[in-house]
Image 1 (tube, helix red, strand yellow):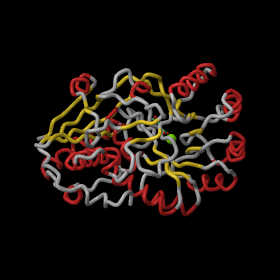
Image 2 (cartoon, rainbow, N blue to C red; image 1 turned 90 degrees about the vertical axis):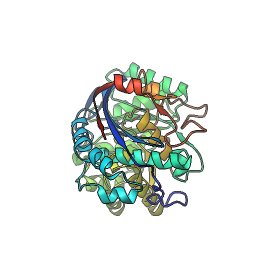
Image 3 (cartoon, rainbow, N blue to C red; image 1 turned 135 degrees about the vertical axis):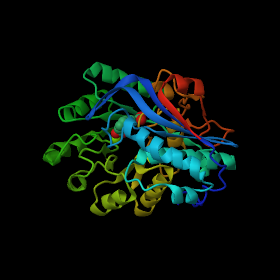
Amino acid sequence: MPGNRDHRSSISRLPPVERVELFHVRLPLQHPFRTSFGMESHRESVLIRLRTPDGDGWGEAPVGQYPRYTHESTETAWYILNDFLAPTLVECAPRSYEEWHDCIPFIRGHHMARGAVLMGLVDLAAKQRGELLGTFYGAPRNEAYAGISIGLKEDRDDLFDRIQSALELGYLRIKLKIEPGSDIDLLREVREAFPEIDLMVDGNGGYDQTDISLLQQIDSFDLLMLEQPFGPRDFTAHAALQEKIETPICLDESIETFQDAQLARQLNSCRIINIKSPRLGGPLHALDVYKFCEESGLDVFCGGLLETGIGRAHNVGLASLPRFQLPGDLSESQRYFPEDLVEPEFELTEHGSIKLPEGRSGIGVKPVLKRIREQSKRSRTHK
Ligand code: OSB
Ligand code: MG
């Protein structure tokens, strides 16, 4: 367990939820983000606000408009939250995690929708204790190391400029997306231009097992890790590759449940697990996987899903835990959006980290309702 607190029982003495508000937001991205599964120029997300007599709890399902990263999308998250979870929350008004667990209707999958509710409950619980999320989770520091994830680019000069400016801003490491046809030669050029930088790559499942011999060349580029080259369910191809390379494999899309982490460990499919709390069903499940990695000697990495400041705050709180030594996909608000939905916006510290604002509690940042309403395609209140 992180710190010395049982993370489920610490979700207790919650104020009663009186209203639940949902917002389906759509924000333009500063830079279109292309991965091996497609391009995004806007980010869509579903936000949840739990209103109580003692203040608000906030969560986010950073699903995206299309079911590409997982099966979830704004449409499915809206459906699960609006038809099932929000009405149940109002009716049940849980005072603890246990009570919520007892009321929640059985729903298979849909981790991001469910995770948004848990984020809201964790935010409320941390606020009740007057603690920032990191402290609430038992982290000795309220700060996470920051890296940047750069999408696929056609133009080399463009990419080199993005890398150069990220380094100048103080990011501690660079992650590049790769796909078949844009990998080994690309890395050779990047390494020539930037021989010393901390570098990692992410295939987002764009390869298959016939690419194993190609991917073996990855060891010559001194990478911190190779993330998810093969499809989500392909634990055996990852294991076959990991046996042949020194570069640690990190699994992202593969790890939807605690059991997936166990399977990856058992088969030696990876050395690092990308912990994204939304994909795992929320912060408590992310903490379960964190603890498992601690016990079984796997490293952890905090990934991101182009979240608004609300989901980002939840990620920063989690990534403050001490096993998160690799800089995560946690960047400044300005890197993602012309205008974020929270105040203050996230900025890099002098030593390349991201923090929640001191002297506050829970997510620390304040969601700006006016901006959220302006950016909402739809919203709904349950009471
Ligand atoms: O693979 O980590 C990924 C964004 C959308 C879907 C998948 C991924 C990503 C990112 C975003 O890499 C990283 C970030 O939020 O900074
Ligand atoms: Mg990834």
